[in-house]
Length: 296
Length: 255
Image 1 (tube, rainbow over the protein chains, first blue to last red):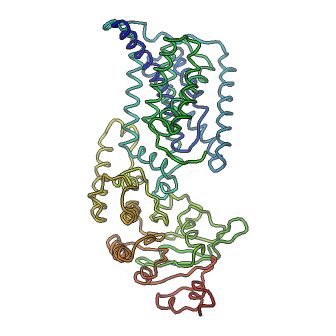
Image 2 (spheres, chains in turn brown, purple):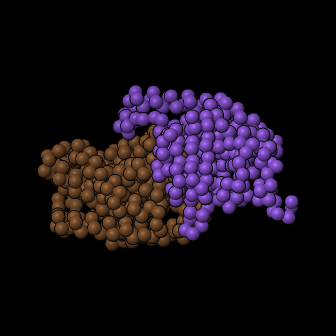
Image 3 (cartoon, helix red, strand yellow):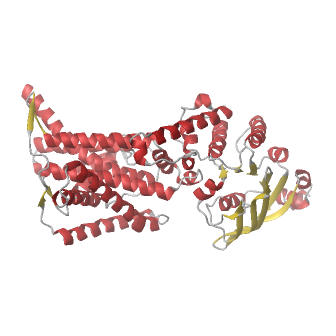
């Protein structure tokens, strides 16, 4: 009995580490959706660019972990803003499907540029934190998991604070609720959208660097699957709802780890999409979403 | 000096002319009404003035500065705010936050400043807290400050919308059917409130309204729009006795 409990807690710990990475990516999806009703399918690739930027910041610029993380977040934020400016803004007033298809196009574009520039072979992410494992009541925790949890938690707390207690956060919520009324309150909506992309992309980049540290490998296609899973996490939590993305990410991470532990690892990707199908059938607004009669 | 000067404003949607050669001069302290049957183009005029539509032709000057072609937020920042015919509050936010948002452009601190809670952030936030509370008290909404906006009764939502527009610190206030959906008693209260607010904040007011008692009671001058064309302009008394206006409202047979 004790062993089983220990095993469950062990898997929970692993699941939460993985889940907090999904949550960081999911936040970008959900923030962008909340504000311009676009599923930014290029988001997973921004996460990949973040991982590579972190990689180069550590290997070429010889930066320690935190400055490298910061550089990756800034570069991704700029990339997010540029993508929005060039690819999505011109389509702001066209049909949603046009912007959605453009997002998929941008995703392919970034992937293929990365493949050209960095070659498809995986690279070993530098060993910033030499592996160290701790054992508490039979449960193993390693220092990388602690770094992931710490960084993810800190970023989410900052995000919550920014969204709820600052001028830009209020503007973001206002634009999400009614962009026209927000304009007439003197809010520069284009600027708010740019900042939303910047914040979402920076969070994805942080997730990219953390994944590099956790799995020790990065490659140009690494954004595809986590991008899709984070999208499922955002839908699961209720797309457009920020706490929903955090919750959805954690649930996804735990579910994935549990499935691997109980069944086998080949099921690990299937579980994400099973969750997507179930949530769309049972509660399409998501766990924390409000029922709306919006037509899509 | 005229605050708002509109010359030959024309707005076409495809082949449809919604507003044709509309002209208006608002002087400091004026309170002018715009009336007309449904679909006459009244709200279109408002949308052109606030930058939501780009006029097909014509000129709009606010404080002698051309504003047609500017973005809505730029026009608001120059000193013109509006309310909406169908209330457009930020429904899921509290009463307090609805007003606080309208101070947005009047404060300025960087994101880093906010995250690190530097003095610039705290002092500016404290300043708008005070100003927001002041507006809430003026509009008698202070006790409901933590209420979600959509939970307020209809009449109070209307009041909140006006309070929110005032938070944007306008000198010209546009009100789109402020009395819509109000009973005669509420309308009477609102009439007094508009007059009082206008004096208190030294505003110039341009309003659209169907409720004739409100319009006739408040406005010094009235413009009548029918099918996008200004068919009459004058004092309330002149408008009430204007043949073209009565025809537009009641049809020719009524005469």
